[in-house]
Image (spheres, helix red, strand yellow):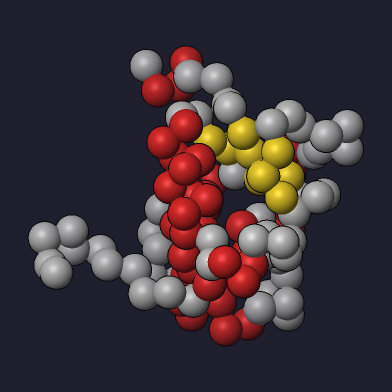
Length: 109
């Protein structure tokens, strides 16, 4: 059922921003993170620090477009993620891009 949901917004690689529609230069290899629900979009927007609101989104949201030379320190952070990058949520990508710790145990506080 989740596969049948339409995309309501996405992170555009060209504009490095959240947009409603794909741009004319969109390419599948960019692997632009998509939002299927308003809740996911709201959660993503809430993760963006106030200082970054007018800045382009971090390039780490598009791991297919990063070379190892661009962000060598990110490879160590991402090495523990076994899941395919194409299935990572935009929120998780933003958390990693900002260098925030990821709590893998939802029961811990």
